[in-house]
Length: 220
Image 1: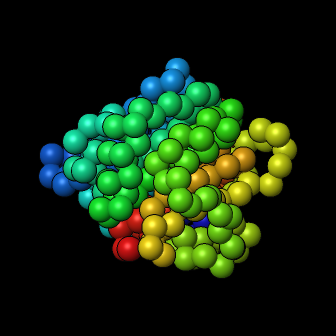
Image 2 (image 1 turned 90 degrees about the vertical axis):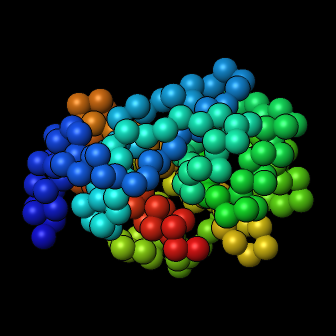
């Protein structure tokens, strides 16, 4: 089964665009923010995740993701938004309010620390939700028990500071509105194989966890 899954993904990942690209009904979105951090890191990550989700979850995502600014009204067009980078993150008051309203209104944000953004993104998100804190999710949380089971939480994709990967959440009225993957580097695992030369099984684990995040976000 594992070999078959790897072969299926390798075969279909080469298809650009997807056979049903014109009929695809939804796009994943990448969050563009200020502060100098490289919000645009991992350009092949979301297209590969979209393809993988279409294959394994039966979704209908376009392989062409959208870029949306934190303060833009366009944010509300995307139920799932991904954020990554290595450095500084700055939200203006208006941007923080817009992101807050988006998340309270039903949106979902996945933040993936690509190494180096942790202190900045925590400060930025505190501006969005000053009344709450990131809390580490237990391995039994539903986000780890979707289509694919991760009994030990997030997979470890890249070494970084050689710490165990951790998944943190921000909750609003008992709903998980933001999932933050730290010391894991899922986005690097979603990228094309020749970008980081990660083993196929590591990439597959990253994609499976990504699919879990997507599935969880859309069923809340």
